[in-house]
Structures are given as C-alpha cells and as structure tokens.
Image 1 (cartoon, protein in one colour):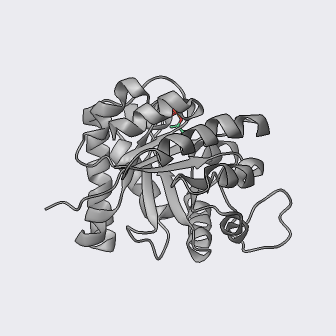
Image 2 (image 1 turned 120 degrees about the vertical axis):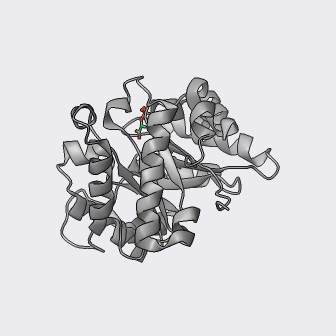
Image 3 (image 1 turned 135 degrees about the vertical axis):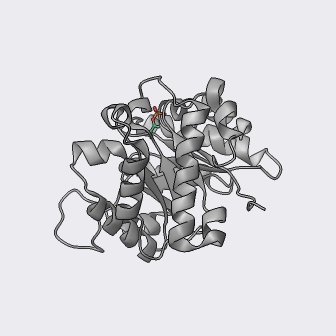
Length: 253
Ligand code: PEP
C-alpha cells in the first residue's frame, strides 16, 4: 500500500514583495493556519532572502514554515552576495529550494552545482525542495522523461531521505505562463520520478517521498492536480502572492 504523505503547499515569492507586504501576506496566512485545527497540509512560504527574518517573526507559533529560494554550496567564505545554508538555518528557515529553473537559466546552474547546494542544505539541517523539469523544446522532442530522470540523477543529494528531501516537478513551459500541465502529463512524470527514487533509495523511501507539482497552479486547477496519486502538494509562484488564492490551493490539498 502507498505511504500516506502529508501534502506540502509551498509558496515561492521569487523576487516579489517588500517589507510592508510581510504582515498582510505571511501574517495573513499565519492567522488562517492558526485557526485551522489539525491542518491536512504543511504550509511553507519562501520569500526573498532579506525578508526571511521578518517572515519568521510574522508566522511564529502558527505552524507556517519559512524557507529560502537558494543557498550557496559552501558553509562560509568569500562569496559576495551569496547566502550559506547554516545562516538560513540560523535565521529560522526549515527548507530551501534548490535547482529552480529560473536559477538554472539565470545563473547557469548545473545539476552538479544543484546537488552540492542540496548537500550543503542537508548538512545544515535544512530540508531541500529539489526542482527539476523539462523545457517546451525538450517536451516537443519527446525528451520529457529522459530530461527529468537525468536532472534527478544528477542533482539528488547524497543522504536524501523522504524526511529531508522533497522533489518539485516544474515543467519550465508551465512556470508563470498560465499554461498548466494536464493531469495525465503530470501523473506520468510524477510516477516516473517516484519509480526512480525507489530504485535509488529503496521502495520505502520512494513511497514516502513527497513530489510537488509546480507551474501555474491556481485555485481553479489545484484539485485536479492534487488528487493525482503521485502528487503530494504544490510549489506555487504567482498564486502564492495572494493569501486568498494560496489558501484556496492549500484547501484543495
Ligand atoms: C514557481 O515559481 O516555482 C512557479 C511554479 O511559478 P508559477 O506558479 O507562477 O507558475
């Protein structure tokens, strides 16, 4: 029987939000979460790095968790502008996203670098959300499963377990475009990811590991994605900037 996996609803604010937005957005979610008895989902928000401390304070005691959008692979040192995983942990973060397609594109991050960042995060005691996903060109070339398997093999951190690592399948063509993967497309890739995880980490870990979908998830399409057997929540960009929309997606879980 498949393991029961608690859905993770993760918001990626990307490079959006100012200090003045923290109270309404993080505080608003914290308020709703605090009023929810035994929520059926885990909620996480990943604001821009300078807002992390403010968000940690805004959600204190509510059960909402805070994560970062990236970290450096080194523990400390001469890396101007970068942020270490130990500092994120020290700031009160529980998670860090690594390998988001915008970082793979904007900063030419390779699977090897993503793996190193994920391993640094695990070493610091953070949980990892590891993003993978194919471009439209790759999908059209019939390479979807190959690309996702290659990225997963290349960037899954040593030491990954179902307790410390979450995979986010984010088709690049669906991110911020309003174009969402169909349930059939989503389930096909998620099932392939789970199969690969099982072969690498064993059936038990593979059964328990959460696999999120990301790419234009909205209240209107969340249910059809969330009910799929291998979808265990969402990584949400645009819709995470609205308390009402993000909460509605969480309720769909
Ligand atoms: C994302 O940033 O990971 C994402 C999925 O964005 P959006 O929901 O806006 O497509």
